[in-house]
Length: 76
Image 1: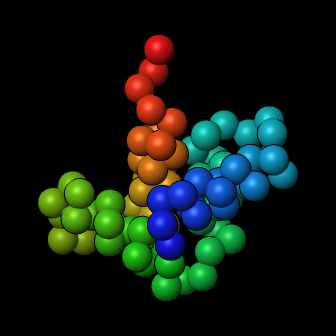
Image 2: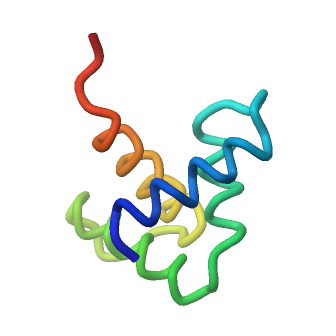
């Protein structure tokens, strides 16, 4: 899944839950994904942190938040 595809998934989840904060929308987005994708996202987060192991779900959520914030661009 590309970052752009992930951003679309996030946006669709956000439309379904407009009153939820960023991290919770990311968690909802991860819950919609197949287990293989969750593990992939978790591994990307752990690699970025330079860690060998960590909790899968929170690491996958962190990856989604990181991608969304990166794609959003710098804060004004």
